[in-house]
Image (cartoon, rainbow over all chains, first blue to last red; front, side, top):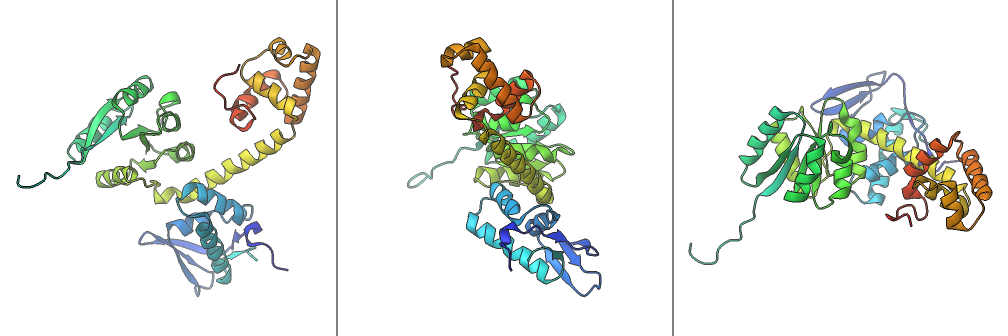
Length: 94
Length: 231
């Protein structure tokens, strides 16, 4: 059964290395095969994928921080979390 | 000049509130050199900031994160919503940004940024943009998540109170005594004491003082708690 995306509590997968490159954050998995580039906003979301914080909490906090339409923010955060999981960089997101 | 004169936009007036004289004066020189900005006033201590804001009505106040109390950015942003507040973040003061933003401040700028960066942030704030140092986004998001959790827990606790208990809590928070409350609600003092005991049990506090402090912190969340007049 698929859980409601907003109720998920994703956690950063162990073994991911994090490096700065030209102001962006590069995530690399333990095989070195998967690399993913995060901008500063995505990095803030990644930083809060701690297994305790739900996607809903991240979205609600982001809404207080960024002057962007709520539905757009929610869609962006949910999409980012799904993509990070699809690439094996976080878990607990499905 | 031939033809209609172009309207001239006056430079935006900036208040600089910082406890460090050299920094304040340097910023004033830099700002006054810009054609679209001018320094309305400088303030160096918490007592003079409010007076300068009231007297000069600046478009934007640059406020040190080290200025406490009524001169602090959250208080200024709430009291003078027509003046944009931009926090000057000192050292590890990133924590100060979340309450300032929630009070309506335009954002914050780190002093490790360049002068061009500082001016760009001032202009962005004047355009109505929120200014948050990118480096601090993750930390700030975490801070807001924790504040949201605290507020949710507080709402849950307050929701356990009956309407009468909420009224008693508001009265206590405003400094009313048991006798005052008994007279106000036309009940006996024993009834009020019973409400106080129930409040302490439901809110898990162990003294009257703690109850009053919690009530004061929760006033804005309680019915009638946001009224200025306690009558």
